[in-house]
Image (tube, rainbow, N blue to C red; front, side, top):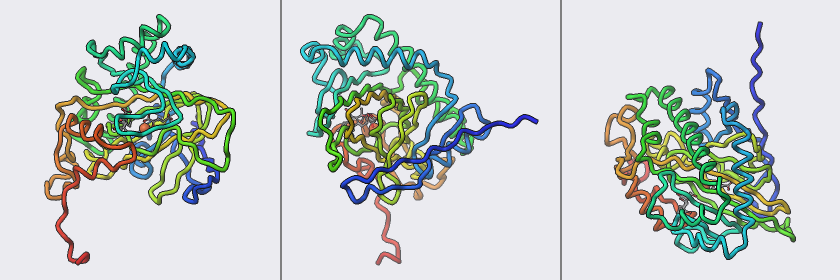
Length: 338
Ligand SMILES: C=C1C[C@]23C[C@@]1(O)CC[C@H]2[C@@]12CC[C@H](O)[C@@](C)(C(=O)O1)[C@H]2[C@@H]3C(=O)O
Ligand SMILES: O=C(O)CCC(=O)C(=O)O
Ligand SMILES: [Fe+2]
């Protein structure tokens, strides 16, 4: 008899921070083996309960992860004046401390790159001009792998939820018009750490896209917010990926999946490096609850919008704003609320 070993779920290692809402928690992060026949059921359960899960047996070569990490480290180690030639981020290119256009800041520097390398983005071109010669190629190969993981995850979601046609979700991230991007975040080490104080690397937010695929080095810092508002640490694991449900998938499942709030705290003497691929639909794609999941329009919790409309609204908002609120349908008063 062959006994298949299931990967152990990881216990969230909550630290006690000054913030009273941040408590130790016995929550487990679901771990999904992408080659397991039960993967689709586990993915849907995790998307419903947490909006977040860890992926193992993903098939991405560890050498590619190491290569991209090394090249990113080399980029961030360049003199500030070189990096600044690729900034400020517009949103693409190199950014430091400022996140987005509306006054958000963090202990961070980053590169944001469009998956469809936009020939008009001079900032993107400048990133590659400053970087090591092989950086562009490594980034392109990595993005293809991330697209593939997003595709597989969305195919499994569609299969489990019996969405028809079954490519409905995965097609959105596969087609060449998909509006996806890759962000590399560097949270520099701190000489002085202040264990009594939360220091924000990347403020709390949800990701606007369908799904995000995150990988980091072995430095902690990422936290997710549970439904009861408790923040819990996600133990880092440099050989796995974490999948984050985005706002768009929340809308398409009519709220059945939750886009998880997350943030990065940087109270550490070691630097954190993360790479995160945001799988987004084409700009012109109409986003609404899927009719095969919610046949009656009056049951839709959200109005229909295009990804382009949502993205514009997101870029007018601050990081921690509840962006989906703008697209929620006004529900008639229920008798019990009167
Ligand atoms: C403050 C902002 C940064 C952001 C655009 C926004 O106005 C609100 C959404 C932010 C976010 C979060 C997830 C991704 O990191 C990101 C690239 C995205 O698509 O939405 C960022 C945006 C950004 O940094 O430009
Ligand atoms: O750096 C991280 O681990 C998370 C970053 C993040 O949430 C983002 O870039 O949207
Ligand atoms: Fe995020």
